[in-house]
Length: 299
Ligand code: ARG
Image (cartoon, rainbow, N blue to C red; front, side, top):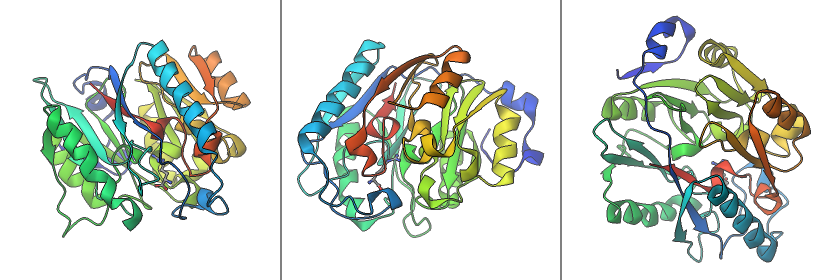
């Protein structure tokens, strides 16, 4: 089943429907943000925010996100953050986990794009090692960067991966991942720096529904998204760019945890039958992240 799909001509709709199922994640990993701050600028959202994070408020918001996962029945596992690694709380980025058909857990460790974040990865690797994962690495001589589930997003309930590239992850990473996990990867090029990770403009809600910000994609990418999902909810520019609406998380295919105030998107979500749980992530938006970036989905 390994294959890179870059345009609709390569997409065989029936074969997508026939892809083997994958269990829904039951856990999330979160990083307690005791040392979280904006200390440098590596994405457009961080400009003008250096030194502006209210740490107490950030910790309060993080606790509320954590309790929402608890409330919808997702088990939360915690890693402590480290002094000098102010972005470690964004734990969607350092890895890409996978559960194979036999039930063995695997993980690819990321190659962070920015030097400031490279030291985060070993802390996660250690956690995966202690928890029985088979650990895989990308060849750093051939692949420049890969930022885990910031750019690589599992299709709900299927052995199919969506792979964003352009700002933080290289297309070449997906060939290795597709071959190793034996899954097809549909690649999507990102073209607007405001939406520098796939998880800032694309959220899989369930097997046939996605929430996207169309302006972040090429025509080819939009064709692929519309070919696979029967229902595509589009976020308006302000809700996507300022409130990170598409950085919502729908772990169970029903309950959507999302930054508070995404009025249009929330209406679309409710009309489509989803339960909406709003939470403020204002301190994390200053760094270019919201709910989806603040956790790693696990099985
Ligand atoms: N400041 C972090 C960075 O630029 C934010 C990461 C947000 N994570 C995400 N998956 N979008 O790397």
